Image (cartoon, rainbow, N blue to C red; front, side, top):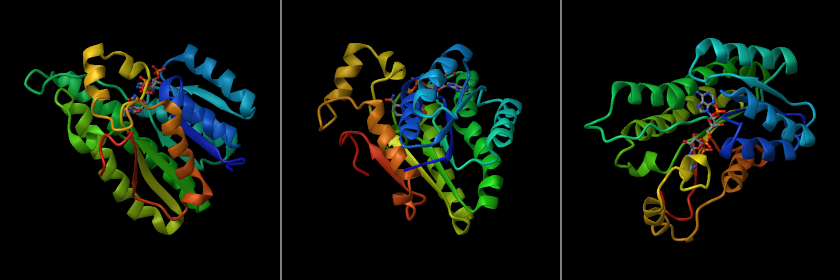
Length: 246
Ligand code: NAP
């Protein structure tokens, strides 16, 4: 159980993040939802409050330091603590490296990698004072395998895993764990963009034969956030139907 734990989940207006927030709320956590888009984040909050009435949502572009600072400060004013941080917000701007524009590289780095550095840094101080914390980054199978057309996204996701290990070493003595969950092919708006040929090619590479659901990722995150995972840090849990076995 995560009773009364305070959990920030970024990118929780839709897709995997929304289901992670729901799962943590179902297990008793109080949620702080963060996303870039005001209407969908309020819809998500309405749903979460049925499970965990003491939850909040803040509109924040994770790539903006002032927005993230404000959201973390509001969380600390409201709850006085942050126990769990799930860095889930992520975007793609796919292109072959030969054709990739500087802007496509930069935007993916800002949203998928730099934002995680900032948010992690901001929650570490209260977590260190409390001598408790669970930080979980949502990475990707392609951070391990590489993927043509996703050089920017792959670099960011692989970077997150190295970052997680370094922070895990820095804060282990304060009872703060830092781990990653690396999804494979999960049914969300991000993967709905693929055409049917690309989708079938991916499905053919999945031994379990089906796409994953956001719930499959959420269960792994909830485990890492739980007391049962207290002795796991600097690790990655793969949720990919056997597509990649690390
Ligand atoms: P999604 O459906 O596109 O959702 C992405 C979420 O991130 C949305 O809630 C979006 O909210 C939020 N977001 C995007 N840019 C943001 C920003 N600048 N500031 C704050 N929030 C922002 O994607 P998903 O499939 O659920 O992916 C979630 C995570 O899983 C990502 O990190 C992704 O890389 C990873 N992942 C997904 C798959 C998959 O198969 N789906 C596989 C591997 C890894 P707004 O639009 O409301 O801002």
